[in-house]
Image (cartoon, rainbow, N blue to C red):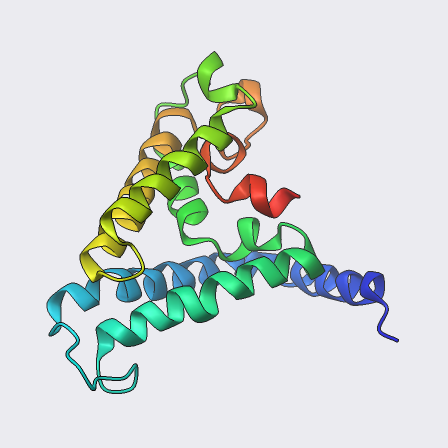
Length: 182
């Protein structure tokens, strides 16, 4: 039988040991995310008979919905919120923006326990309305808009002294962070 605590401990030791290099991991995942998100907009739309191996838009869609998100959820089972701190491109972008940001105090409405729930509902309804899984433009709008919000919130509120350097976007606004925290 596999001991989950032992596996999680080994993974934690690995990441603590290589902490100085985690910024490179952020960059790799951010660039990977940007390619999956925006390159399909510059490629031909899928036609009948295309497969993920013959059309990049289908490949991107398959990777995002068939691999990326299931792996994010699985990683939460074994390593907690490691996805959030190590590989999330939106969290990384928010953190980068916070380094040169305004460091304003986080407003009460953003600190509300309901904010992530409302964020999740907005993203879910928007995604279903514009067909985020079926249309490459929808995926770019929803994820690109979410990325823009992460950068904006990081720039405005990131690393505020009163909040001990916490990522404002990840802690208070991320629509998936609360799900992973379960």
